[in-house]
Image 1: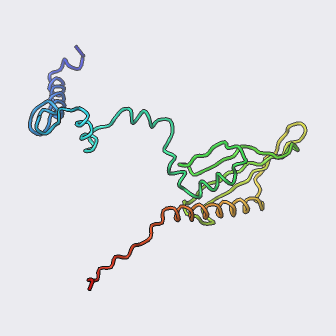
Image 2 (image 1 turned 120 degrees about the vertical axis):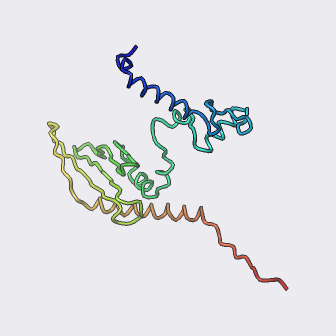
Length: 194
């Protein structure tokens, strides 16, 4: 027996919690067994499970297991600005693309082997397609023959060109999405026919 149950007060508190727990398992008719009323509950377990899920009383373990290891990326693919950014820099290897964090970071990229490479970070400040929705930073790495590298951030024409291209593609994606979801308004004539 536990050293805590030696005291009479703790025994009463422990007993109170056990009875409260058992009573909370019962339904409103006063029975202590869940599902005790055969008129309200179906004998088919699949129907009971479905009813409980519809009422928000339970969860399925397999639903939790199937959704682990990542998020739901359907929303990310529907964001035109995000898709356009990935399309514009698709030639560069990515280090990180975190939709929930709102940032894309590329790895160092070089077209030639002269020791100069660039790295791009795109931070999303808004989901709206506008010029101040993106913050694009470009880092340059220059390495000499001894592999001593100097990294610096420079504001260059490349940043504004990237931003223009991303906004242009995002606008095209948004228009395609609107055209795909467009449903014409039907005018219903409510005048009496003569």
